[in-house]
Length: 623
Image (cartoon, rainbow, N blue to C red):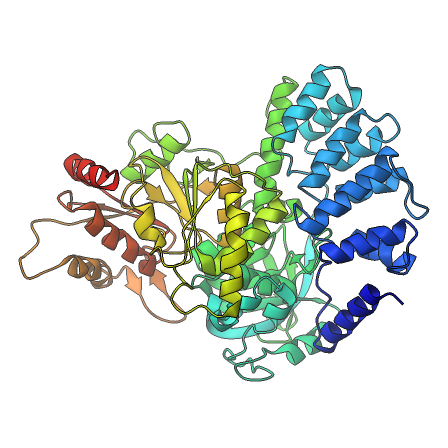
């Protein structure tokens, strides 16, 4: 037994003893597995086949680079393997989803012996990006396989996953009260978030309602989950209010791991988790959609742990023995389609790919995955004008789907490793957004050993893609961003407090921020705004902080905010706040008001400022 194989088996045994699957292969292990397929004894041959096929991360991970190159060499006939033929190598490339594998598959379109398999594999993928131009050039040059691929994309060939069944039987884990993202992804375990199965063991480690953890403060209710899974039914999480807080992506990953199904091509990742709640925090709801989950909005009173529900997904009815039938709705009218595509991000990329192919073939638009119908409006507020400018229009109306250009991206360091993983999975080698800024302001003051390690390797992952990195100690990321903002442009960031006093920012979870950085755009259904208008002049004994506190105070007096744990109402939740009447404010003071709207649950903020205040700020920032 080779040393590397013995070490890998030891690693698997250690992980198994903690109820965890092995980690994805690292670069050295991938290299050893490839060598084993070429005749060496690093790994047993059959193990090497399974590991190389299933345990390598997709995208542009270092191990993925080695795997993709090896598969291309086999597929093109440059090398031979007794355990892998040329056509099977092409199929394996298709399972790698994105990144280097796409480059090699496109190259194989000109190989007569495997071009048919390459067309079939590429037809299922959506992370094509600039390689579309290469396929287009091949088609122009008369390469028949390239034109066949265009025709497949035009027919939405990437929408190949099994549709959501009309009836789903799920068994509940019921957590009463409000479940925050910190309940699902505790901040004290931030260092394990990139290891999804390990981090998921901390879910609900402090308990929630009737759910008791295995070891308080250390391990969540893993034994209870194992008991519930014994029925063979898919589990579903059920809470009253779910997803408040800022750790949306890692919280969603925890739910996915315990309640979802394995995701082919992504070691230790799952999808299609069912989460039932009376109310979801808006950004958390969208994050679930991004990952292909099924967020269900329903009356949850009387539902209990261990109860079996039947979800009639097309009819919006849930049934259970001894319970009156209840209606439910998904988080979006597109949820079932998003889940089938592998998530909202895949649906967006697939729709873009289909539209490009249909334009090339001079066909009309497709219908299956068409975005929501647009609404018309004769007048637009400031936020709607800014979004409109980012989409090349005068404005965007509430309820209208769009994909605005995102010019500025803020990457905080606490989400840095997760964002880097997301960028790799997306196959991002160059940022599509104009300005991507990475900071270390969260960990600069008191870094632990893991923080120091991240501070060493993360800058390279950002700068090699064209981003800018602040050094530890350079200051708060928001202060730097405010120096480069343009009044009519849009941005986003993984920190909820990424709020712009100039322009408009819609903060998002780290996965969607990575998508915006990679592509330069963001999927958005324009929400209705809440107008906050100040009247008169600021009294001498009051400050900007008083104005900040006045906003929720007046809203509560008007009955627009209800702080009840189970019947919460918040007029600002999921909506932009548009502030008027403070034109005289400086940009710095305007940021203080915008920043505080994160605590109101608003998705973004605009504030109308006098032109001279904006000019004054820009002049100072440009010194």
